[in-house]
Image (cartoon, rainbow, N blue to C red; front, top):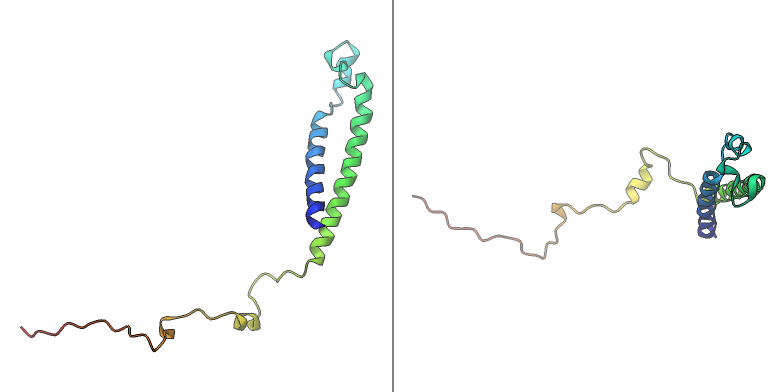
Length: 119
């Protein structure tokens, strides 16, 4: 469930970026009044404003809802450990790291010794 909401969240975010970049600024309408090329859009001289604005608002609401859902799932996943020094009981529960003194006694690890020569 969480992965599906995350995937929807990413798709909505990408769609929001694309829609916001497609929209014209406020100054683009002045050029259209004097016969500029900005009035020759796919949606007509006025149609794109309503469609893109409405779609952006719907996607923004969806982005907000998915953000809240992901935040809810994150809080329900469990309490994160506090930052800093862990509790002493937690440290004692961790496995000890083997040291050189922990070698098994049944293994013969003695190296051959050369005879001493007194010259």
